Length: 313
Image (tube, rainbow, N blue to C red; front, top):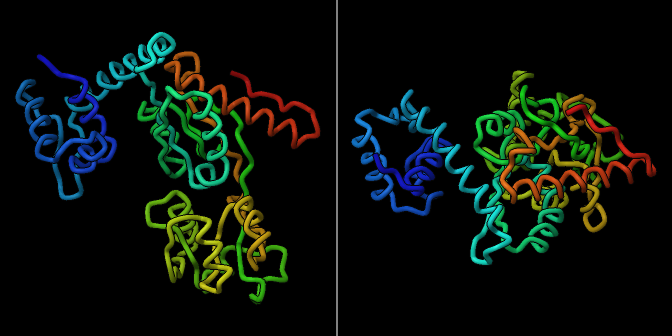
């Protein structure tokens, strides 16, 4: 039985995306080559590894077993690469992070830019996911680190406080709601919204909250970033729900007003998730320590110098 690392990475990407086509794209392989590799693995083992259906593919029992072994092998390779990185300039480490929309757009860019500048041999693979999916993916070994809502924590993971994140309603300054300080989400569902692309974490979160009320958001336009949401709202294209940090940043230059939402789900404590910080590959451990250190610095500033108590580990 002979599998190479390309086979294992391809199989991991295919099962993560539920698609041979998207898995091939992530593995930087042509679809025909990827399909041939999957067939070759199945022929070599003598069992099917994937169940193929209209909505994509899913691993069989044998596929799940292979997936477990692939994760172990690839993690060991990353650990080796990280440990040897100090001795070989040409050997680079990679860290995979999953984060919700707020963390990805507001809290991570400057932190990751600083980290990348200080660590030129480490690359970062960053993906937008909804908080409940992040915890499950970290527990399954699909990524090294995750940042999402503390409320969506999965048992068995380490969870470390990261940031407090509040969602607010952004409206043009001339809007009928602009003079109010807060509003209920249910009272907004007859308004026209500016939203993010389908499948983004914040879009799915708001759609779920509306569905719980038996409604759907009236989305007049979808745009590709939170910054564009604010610009479109300021221009009168509708209203939008965005992280408070995003809205406050744009209020300096755009005619925007903000209202806090009365629902508890609008205030989220973001947490840094990891399976076991002591067993992370060296590049992931370095990033974990950098993010955790930045979180503690932020908490100290927010409390006037008093250090925030760490949760029991």
